[in-house]
Image (cartoon, rainbow, N blue to C red; front, top):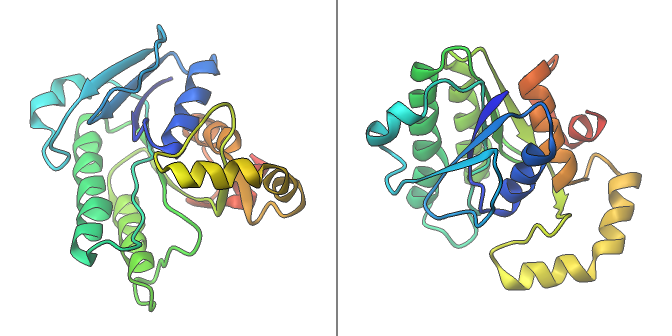
Length: 219
């Protein structure tokens, strides 16, 4: 399986990239990002691209792939609402529409988050934006599309956040997070389990298009 990965330098994307590189069923990974991953591996190829609303300059390199693992995302905390919508909805849809046109047999997997509002009518703006993004992705002519809604994610295997204080929190709470993964799988998963689940669903499918933390851990 040949996959395209968006967001490989973020915490979620680092974990997904790691699982792609150790999974024998993944033969090639194309990372599309604004900066290099810093990872060296024979399976990994990288495209550095600045304008994530226009992929016309690199379209020729985006065809011929079986799956997209889309891990780009930002927090809405402290962010201008229109900026959040642009980075969450506009960027995601620009990439997805391009890939659907170039790869009609592709499976698209998208990381959102617990609490995403599929009705687009709730009180939380971020949840409405995420819900609209999910809904519109599911309308695109992919072979299939799956929305991953993890709750908490414990980073493993050297995966790190770009925010220093968050790494400190993860280090201090590691024993608790490990316990939560086992005891309350509806509230916690790991970067390893999320990456493995995205690969397996892209390869083998899943009975429903929206996956919560319990689904991710079960897979």
